[in-house]
Amino acid sequence: MYVGRFAPSPTGPMHFGSLVAALASWLDARAARGRWLVRIEDLDAPRQQPGAAAVILRTLERLGLAWDGQVIYQSVRAPLYEAALARLQRHTYWCGCTRREIADSALGHAGDGAQIYPGTCSRGLAPGRTPRALRLRAAAGAIGFRDRVQGAQSQTLAREVGDFVLYRADGQFAYQLAVVVDDAEQGVTDVVRGADLLDSTARQIHLQALLGVPAPRYLHVPVAVNAHGEKLSKQTGARPVDPAQRDRVLSEALRFLGQPATPDLDEAVAAWDVAAIPRRRTTALADG
Ligand SMILES: [Zn+2]
Image 1 (spheres, rainbow, N blue to C red):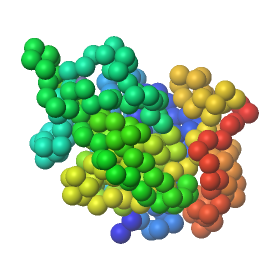
Image 2 (cartoon, rainbow, N blue to C red; image 1 turned 60 degrees about the horizontal axis):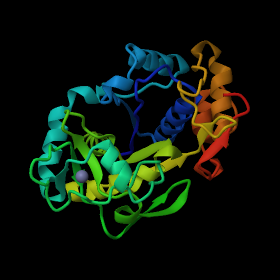
Image 3 (cartoon, rainbow, N blue to C red; image 1 turned 60 degrees about the vertical axis):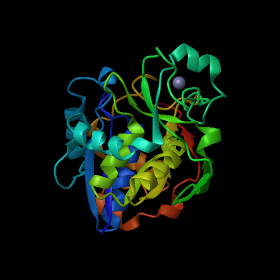
Image 4 (tube, rainbow, N blue to C red; image 1 turned 90 degrees about the vertical axis):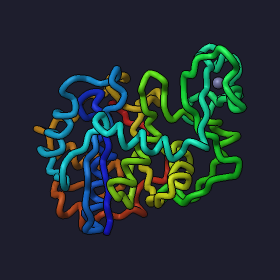
């Protein structure tokens, strides 16, 4: 049984980029006669906007993108993430480096812009140092997977990402940990999301292998960017999706995904063609 999901962060109202991800995921699930779940990724409290989750859910409803079952919220699932950390214990170590020390010692930048940690604390924390973050030892070998749109992918975590953070001593669980735990716990078989997360996938597959949970299939759709190549978001001034303009908004998102533009979602499900999705990571929009 196909199980898909849409997992927005409640940092603001829904914008075109997140609509594209939601619609692609919904269409893929409905075309497979599967279930489609919604999960609110509200772990990063400082970035959140009060009420944004409710606005996103109301927008999905008004667009006709109905979900199955209860919406889950990551902020109340800490015991699950703690249990996963306990199971990963022998693959993790405490890092005491400050931001400054990491910036000064980094081996370069990973694809997502994060600094590549050189493993300074991997043999144990020096006496007197405060533990700041729990890191996972990155896999030495290449991790390969086939993305349903982007094709064959490969990443060597040890060289391209470094030992990455799963948990911070201030109580913050990392996105990479939470997403893997939740996808497994919810029985997600198919992850459909924006290609800005393509670089996270090998980390998630590594975690799935260490936790002994199945890896879902992956499909990464192009990300809408503005004329400067910046992802559309509240920060880059993207306009929120207006559900009162439902037909126009859905048609634009379908066209973006290489699908026939129709405001009729039943037609869109029947016409859903993964092979027609543009095989690239970003698509610039004239007007963000
Ligand atoms: Zn360190």
